[in-house]
Length: 397
Image 1 (cartoon, rainbow, N blue to C red):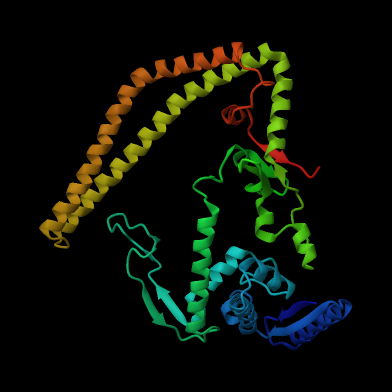
Image 2 (cartoon, one colour; image 1 turned 60 degrees about the vertical axis):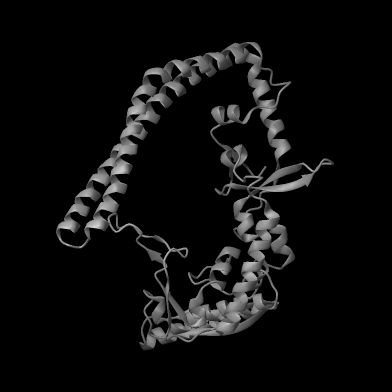
């Protein structure tokens, strides 16, 4: 059985509007009768409420709180966030933004939000540099302010702490098992693959060989969030709008690259001529663009430091800083300025010798292409794929 909720609203209490409300309720009641596998959880009805703010729609908020309350109950019963995602969709619960599709990260954020235990946390962000006045997230750098809210909690503080401890223990275990630092998720195929649904691909371990070396495959990221078509069908969930793209093994991508490049290599001289032209053009552009962007960035930072110094002087004149505070901050700013000025000088010297060094490297690559490279004998280097392939669009067929 799939649990569903009915939510209807009219913006005024006029007779015509209230009649429309009855028609809406009747429509959903009839729809419920047509689906024998649907079980009504509750009806949520707001009369004479504007749609511009969800805070004024009491029954809408009650529906959302019921869904979130279910999150905590299920998690305390030992059900993981992915299974909770499927269960909430089965029950027809909607997210706070009215969506019918849930995700494990969304549920994790709900489970970690102390607001639902009756607590409000302030200073989740702070300004570390009062001269720059830019906010950043507070990860324990400064003390947060915790106060009791006036709203009704949907979970006790004791149970909220239990949920937090379970989440922390699972996070630690996941980190130990994942070994992400050894197998970085970003590679050439992550960079180039794009699904027909518009999302990118995630790398997954497909299998291991006898030596224990991992073999990878690539899965559409949207399936990681929603679940695959098969997994949703097994759970009786809707597959409307779910990406059906199958996973792609890395060896297939390598083989396809080899076949394509080998086919192109049949007209070797034309390809080499194009490659040489592209290499020279890319290198020439890189020399100018890299230095130009870095110089621009350095000048921008130097201007920011100058502005900070001016504000610092003004604060000292206004008596907002003691002499000791002023000297300490000014010393740090001067050191930053010296470092930037030193980098500018080194760029000027690099420009004098850098072009000759790059030209030698380009010549070496050109010689290798013309004399030694054979796509039938060697695996295509990622650098070659990166240089010649802009995007790999994965189609349904």
